[in-house]
Amino acid sequence: MTPDVSADASEVLATLRSRGWRLGVAESLTGGALASAFVSIPGASDVLRGGIVAYATDLKASLLGVDTALLHRAGAVHPEVAVQMARGIRVATAHDGVLAEVGIATTGVAGPDPQDGAPVGRVYVAVVTPEREAVTELQLAGGRAAIRAEAVAAALEMLRVSL
Image (cartoon, rainbow, N blue to C red; front, side, top):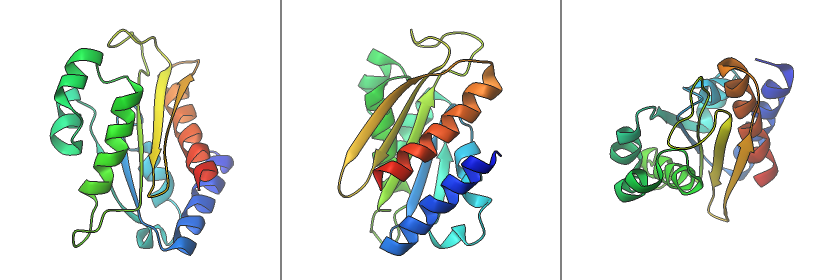
């Protein structure tokens, strides 16, 4: 993990902690690396509720509540899929019926081949809070490892700025 990723994860956790907000992480192409960035910070457990790696498209629907018709029509690499994943992780990580205040999601194509009509390096990151919903499209370069690492860094930065 790069120092910038660790610093961003630490800053995000501190901001969430100061607000009394909890976090849920939904991942596809990042395969748990985003949750791992948070878990590497001591004390993360008082903010991070958990995460779901929904790598298979059908799991995005069954575990995160992404609309099946959307997945069939647009595929898993789509901005609305990312937003629905972020909404869904708030529900999946609820406690005593209270949603996690923040959901973040990543979906995209790390390669080596395009997927669902999206080119290698296309990534969507979504953040959903009680105050707003935002999604961003990225076109990242490099091999699988580089794309995944950049997606994690971009997700942390988006969350940091969103808070």
